[in-house]
Image (cartoon, rainbow, N blue to C red):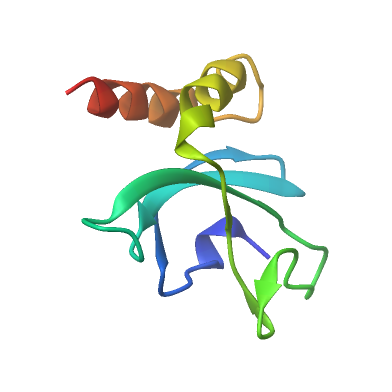
Length: 97
């Protein structure tokens, strides 16, 4: 399943920052937290018609990464050929404001 198609009601994807067709990392807003905090989230995309992992009640969802690890993940992803460097840099710039 394409990461752009995974849109649970509690996590709004703002940017896909990594996608190698098998595994994806997104940046977005977690709506269950006060004032909607922003997080990285990961998922295995599945193959063909599979919904990937994780799922909740049969629907594809994202697994949030602790916000303490955001900068570490983003820095490491800058060297990956499957990452969207423009999106990563824009996240760094937004967090500095």
